[in-house]
Amino acid sequence: MTRPDPSPSPAEQLVGLLDLEQIDLNIFRGRSPLESLQRVFGGQVAGQALVAAGRTTDGQRPVHSLHSYFLRPGVPGVPIVYQVERVRDGRSFTTRRVVAVQRGKAIFNLTASFHQPEPGFEHQVPMPEVPDPETLPKLPDEIRAHLGEFPESLERMERRMAFDIRYVERLRWDTGELRDVEPRSGVWMRAIGSLGDDPLVHTCALTYASDMTLLDAVRMPIEPLWGPRGFDMASLDHAMWFHRPFRADEWFLYQQESPIATGARGLARGQIFNSEGQLIVSVMQEGLFRKLDG
Image (tube, rainbow, N blue to C red; front, side):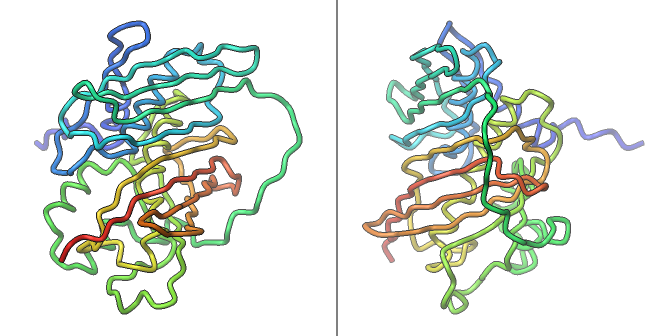
């Protein structure tokens, strides 16, 4: 008789990662998994900080924007403390400021604004025409097919990856294929498993996901996305605007482009659409790209 697998699904692991421990009125503590990465994943810190901010509101106003800076690299395996400042509770808007602290030093700060929905006029850009996600290969399968033996590091990535990621255009695997490649990228994504029904969890899960592939657009013309890297890459800041309700465990299209890269910094912007073509989130981020020696 085969026993059921007791290990949590990737989506359950993500929900657990976003479930902060409240240790005082405005102070929360988040787990930081012990991994082989040099630094804590930025999307994790941003998602946890937004959870902390949301936990200090009445829950009736969804977040409509966040602006954040990555100040220091986080250390994997060391808990992160989130200190929330209740900046404003107005009639329509709520503002929170969060500082993430690890080993006594600030590693990240975030300002989030929450807005009571109001009626108004509407317009939006159209969603690009791209292949249906179900017709595209899963990212681990695509990597495995091109690289042959799956590297151990990617095996670990596959086990913990909370999102199904599918690139809408074929990936380039050799620098010789990069001629005339434009600095843009698109992926379909959705959480692997249910995230429950708390809107804040879905917002914070998508915040986590928004940092996974955005800087791909900067790298597209200079090196293959998978394989040895020629640059040390780090997120510097991150801003998001949430336009409509959504579920992060349903397919969404993340269109990304880079308008400029200069001075060892690359700027990327993203638009996230649901499967019905509605623009649900806009994203901006700048990344640091330092050429590795050798």
